[in-house]
Amino acid sequence: MEKDSITIAICTAYATEELVVTRLINLYNAGVKRGIKEVIFAASTGFFTENANYTGDINVFKNINYDDFDAVICFSEIIKDENILGYISKGAAEAGIPVFMLERHVDGCIDINFDYVSAFEDLCRHVIEKHRPEKINFMAGIKDNDFSKGRENVFRKVMKENGREVDERNIYYGGFWEVPAEAAMKQMFEDNNIPDALICANDAMAIVASNMLMERGYKVPEDVIVTGMDGIERARWHEPEITTCEIDEVMVGEYLVDMVLDWLDGKRREEKYTIPYVFKKSESCGCVLNTSYHFAADAVFEMFDRNRENQLYQVNMYEMQAEISNAENLTEICNILYKYAFTDSYIALDTGISDFFEFPLRPDGDEADGNAYYVFYQAWIGSRNFERFFRSKNMYKDMCDNFQTDLPVIVFPLHFSGDFYGYVVSRVDPRPMFFNKIVMLNYALGNSLGVYRAKKSLMNSNVLLERANNMLAELYVKDHLTKVYNRRGFYNSIKHMILECSEKKWELFIISIDMDDLKGINDKYGHSEGDIALKTFGEAMISAANEHEICSRFGGDEFVIAGIAEDGNKRAREYTGQMFAYLDNFNKTSGKPYTVTGSIGISVTKADSDAAIDEMMLAADQLMYENKKERKKFRSNSRN
Image 1 (cartoon, rainbow, N blue to C red):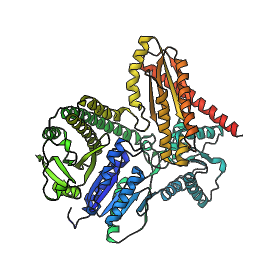
Image 2 (image 1 turned 180 degrees about the horizontal axis):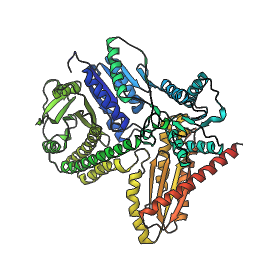
Image 3 (image 1 turned 120 degrees about the vertical axis):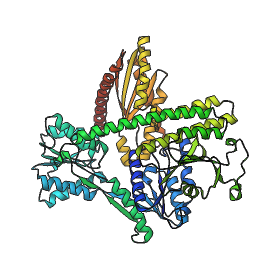
Image 4 (image 1 turned 45 degrees about the horizontal axis):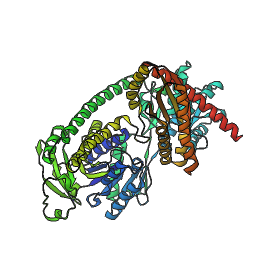
């Protein structure tokens, strides 16, 4: 990192999320192409609450020496946490360097936002002017919602410019997601108002519309053109593939790097920058031949290969943890790591944590003040070196210099149960699987070092080892926000429950619960309040459960409880009563401007096979949706 080079710090959370990984890889490619050095400071997860992960992960952002960098690109909408964004903006301001905040405004920083208007206008023009359908319907999002009205206004503008009057009976509201979109389509069928083209304000509604049209015998696009907006991955896999507007992520990477370079050169200095969406013609408007089947097949094969590689490395991480837990000293740990690490890396420990070290540390010169990191593992190009000190202030610069490469590096905080130990610094491999593997290594190493440290200072090391392994295992079976099982954890646990149910001749019950108005809470009060509502919902579920019941979140606002009892129907009613009593107490005492509640469906049987579970869940879902309709009707009548 010489003085005459340009070096950019990139700050993000959720280092394994598809969108984040895609943007990091494209920034990598754009930076390498332009000779820019990049250091990525990453947290493995998000920052919902100040838990143990928060306490550990935040250190990667608190200790950046901004004097080493020329600019910062911050995925602020991904990080979200105001404290962390404050550390970044304050540190950069003190160093006199610009911070480019992506999709979330922070005072004193440069805003970068995405513009969908021009691309959506191109899409509307394409349908109206090229295909010239006689009758056009529009499916907006939420009525009177500014975001939805913005897209609706674009449609109205293009229609007017083409001399076409908008019939208000042809405007439907699909709420931006599946359930209200299904209701809107049912209304369209009841109205006998099937258009030649249906322009939807997002892809989720377009997918629903396309599927429901084809279920009723209409061909897309031969009978009805259907288009979307946003470019979600499911739209690419759908058959037919949805014509939409999307972000060109390769362009985003190049645009961000060029924007920083122009700003540093003084060519273009603005407080706000905008990156446009791109109109993408595809199969659902008839402009692209059918390729979605092949794309979906390729995606499945790619996913299979990634999952297999992921599983193999996960096994390696369990084996590594087992070996490190039996290590006697850091030298042994270093040799173990050399067997399992997959990329050029430094692993540096805070010299202030004395119980890691079985020998007195004697750093020279400026490092002797204790504010230093000891590199106990260093490996690249087949070489190893165990002992080296770096001052905290110059650590990243010195490490990057020692990599002897201009390629990007990534920095993760190393921690366990809220205790911060140091950093893992690795050279980036621009493949998606790299980010999954480096996060697994970081978690496994943090857990392992936590156990190793406990063994040196406590007699109950076996308890802490189990805790470390459980924390790693929970990453794959638990929903991080609500603390209940995810879909994978549910199906793993239900097998044992069915066996016990059969042995005891008890009944198995399934409760399908759909949290009410989560979308409304997010839209009106923000996603942080939506997270609080979801977390409260999970706490209510857990509070009502006994040892014969499992709670799970299948995604979004969908939850499932399974249990066994002599009288399944009775116990299911007892459970829901206890759960809703918890929610009623929260609603009365929390002071929140919204109500946390849900709609339920219950299915009971003497199930003795896995196959019966899906049938029960389908029955419970149907009853839950009927309950939701009745509750909506009741609330509507009450207001009237």
